[in-house]
Image 1: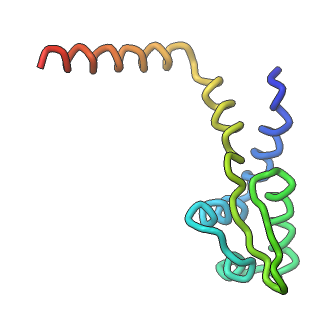
Image 2 (image 1 turned 45 degrees about the vertical axis):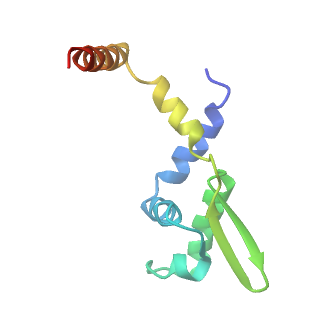
Length: 112
């Protein structure tokens, strides 16, 4: 059992909701203020803030308040643990196919 299992669990739980996935997709482009993030969703601001709280608790986003404006951004490297876990779940056959593809690419390059 990997040491980072609880991190993976928290991230997957947070991303299980379509609203939170949409927020992450939006923040992948650039940081945004909460009102801008909440605009596309038909829910009250307190409900939307709960979604942001789940993402922040999972370590996916960071928020900073400057005066009355709260800006939200993706935490750098937040999804790396998920990428690592997914990579470990690849089957040996997928890995062998990748290696074969690399070998064939190298062979065809040498022949050309």
